[in-house]
Image (tube, rainbow, N blue to C red):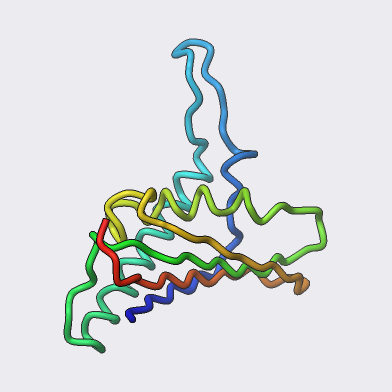
Length: 131
């Protein structure tokens, strides 16, 4: 079973709390910090996929179904909801790790607190099933 691990070293943006509404356009849009975070996740995921392919001598298959785990370390004790972090991370990986986030068949996550430390680790495991 193939497993891809992506490690990030910055604060995870909670998409649910970071959407803005444009009255002019009549719809919600991503704020600058959400876009920057998604770009960061896409960049480090691309590097992780490349390293994974080199180490395993095969191509990552975007057409499978996946198990998704997100571990987050928050740098302060402010009340945070880990489920809101999934949205931003899943969207950032769409089209890169998998074709569509509907291919994720299970999610799990955990959070911890360590003063001044902001990190996250995404573990994506391929199943034997194709979408």
